[in-house]
Image (cartoon, rainbow, N blue to C red; front, side):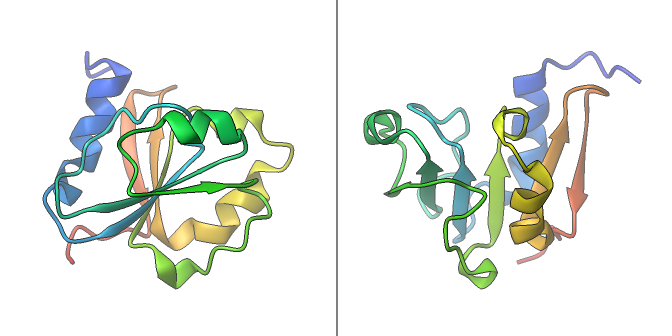
Length: 123
């Protein structure tokens, strides 16, 4: 069912419960720019395989260079894991998803709808 929202609007709507919270977020595959703003209290860590791209991302509090499929990230480190246009570039996306599944926010473009995988809106 198409809600009529553009994909970026759907992402912002789905992230809205997290905006303004004191949380630690992993933006996996952040690239050179982040499209979401979670507010001043959020501590955003970007992970990208391209060192030059992640170095240009001015919205990050911390930049990591590495492969999402193998980078050592303890699940309890992050309150929320966000990725956008990343999974289709991975050799083993299921492996990457399994590493942070309980904190992953999934926004599906194919149905223009968003859903949580284990994330709760309470913090």
